[in-house]
Length: 149
Image (tube, rainbow, N blue to C red; front, side):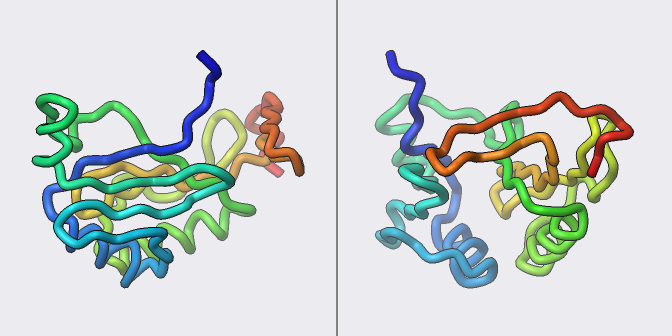
């Protein structure tokens, strides 16, 4: 199997609340929105973030646990520590909950976390060791506390 992800789907309780958070308050442009059913955003080259009603997702994929207990985060990398704080502030103003404020990390970057109205956890991160080339290839450099940029 080719290691490739083209769609990440998250089950949500109330799609209209999700739409209001991401589209109306954060300003994301939906790729497609079917009220009470599914919401798609293109979030990168060839990558779609999909929000699907949790009861419909469970009917297709099998029983789901509570998203608040899911051991994953979605990451949003930005250009500077100030950008981390600005995105966290915007998320909080849109109704998200800050679960960890922006802070210097032991590995050399700066990050903080928020959750959306369904408890989906986002990391907002400045990682000076992460670069994306014109082809989309990601390069990760090992950083240390004194290499934070």
